[in-house]
Length: 326
Image 1 (cartoon, rainbow, N blue to C red):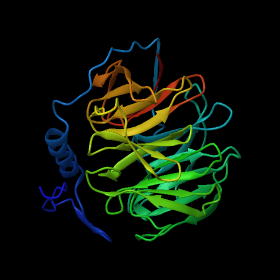
Image 2: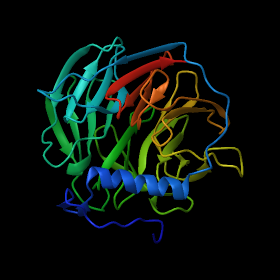
Image 3: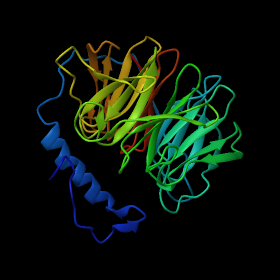
């Protein structure tokens, strides 16, 4: 292991991509586990256990003979919830988990999308991760446009994976696999700024996976580095989430969302749990553990919180969506 990166020999199920070898799923999972033990074991934050007063689950609808699993989730308009699954579909649910409409991404032969957001006018914007672009749909699923292409220049992408908006509906997109940065765009997709780079230092990332905006600050889940970074919304690095001099350490934080109560919620892929943190960095409580029962999660991937402080979790390994309140 050198310079914070890990290396591997391609397995029999690995395949060549435009940016090099893409590891087989089992090998990628093993690599994550190795990094987790090196970078995060023994550093999990301690906090009061949270109690869920509501817990419901629903399955992703079948895709032919297969049962896909959810990956990303976002709050839509009029109480709707938008999600992406491993069949490469966009799914729009009502608050009870009933699918209202769905549509397929443009192409899923290379890989599936991993980030989604809904604008106030109903447009759905998706990080088409393995095609290195952002895809725009109207509220009913009609394709509108693509923005970006594979590359390292401003407005180009390498594996865009997370997306959020600010109060003006500017878009923030995080990438991994080479760029490891955040880019800011207008609500119509015009490039505005880029910040961050690969590494372990201040303002650097190893797989930024999810992000959220609150009160002029952008909070970015830095998965492999097991931490959350804070930036101003014009890209100035402000520090790490946690008390001054004592940044909170997470266990593969994969997504982060702002709650209706003003708190930040972080879903931890490695720990199978949720952490609740104040914007100032005080750890307010934690919930869940790895497993498949009630109060448990299996490699949770995505997270969203609605105005009523109801949480929606893409419980990926368990092939279900979970909704809960504390």
